[in-house]
Figure 1 (cartoon, rainbow over the protein chains, first blue to last red):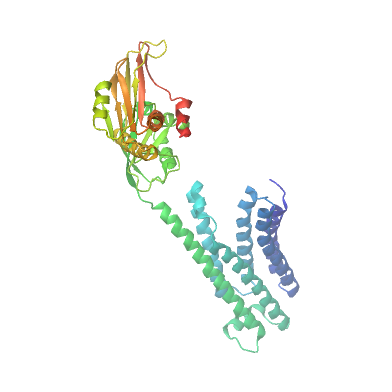
Figure 2: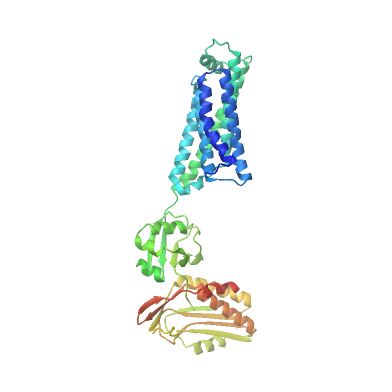
Length: 295
Length: 147
């Protein structure tokens, strides 16, 4: 891979994830929360910067495209789970964490299932917003945690105090207001996360249940001779001619041979010459033949 | 304007006469006849032409209409045969009628170029050695681009 600056930033973000977790869990004191917050903020900033720089400097790489979303998801999920400990495994944080994990599994699974069609699920605006909200919500959770630990005497039970603050907020209790605010932010992030996952799911379902249609396929001249048939009815889910040819090729060796060199095949959809990318929407007849030799 | 697709041999002279009969206000009629030639040193026994009838009718009618508009044709006629053809028999005919000869010549050439590379016909030559599909030539493939 290329060690471009955007790629280094992305890789650093991936390394930052366990660092944030260790800082959050190791001592559970203000100093380590500060360290965790600072690492997390820097990592969050690299998320905004790496893609921007990669585009600006024309340094977009396959590594970056692959690693960037992995690094995002890793740091957000790892940090949220680590935060469950100082927040005493409160359901108010647990539920968003679970929803976010489920959404990431869902979207990764859909992308995997769609394979080379996964570009159908390219990143949406909503998905970018949810990442920003997740980062901001996590930062404010750390700030709430920090303010809270400064207000408490060292003897206080951190976990018990946190929970009671959430359950019994009082106007005098400044950290609790911030805590409620950051939990609200986390829930907003969660709703956005859920919606963007739902958006992907709808798109994937639309692709998976695309209609099966009957297409009459005609073959002429040597294409017909190689296949041994002049026409057939095919049940297909192909979206365009390209997919239809892939489907035919996978039928048997004869088709593979006949469609070996697409440069010497001409295509007509509903009796009009078309190119290989032509969509099959509303097409009922497709013909394959060699270059014409009339006149 | 007419497109005729037929298996049977036709008499070009008869068709020219019939075509000219119905014309008014025309100064030029161009007709081109393609003939089955004994290819190279091959001993051509016969020529077989396969076609895609629905597409042929569609596309030829369309291209006829566009040539009529472009060269202000009074009339045009395309005949193309399919099936088995003997040496020296006519394969096809293109006829155009316009006020002036340039329009008639250009339109006829355009229609010929179209027939050569865009109309769904395929020729197969039968010789003593067997049979082979005629390959399209780059010239024919590119000749439409000049229009």
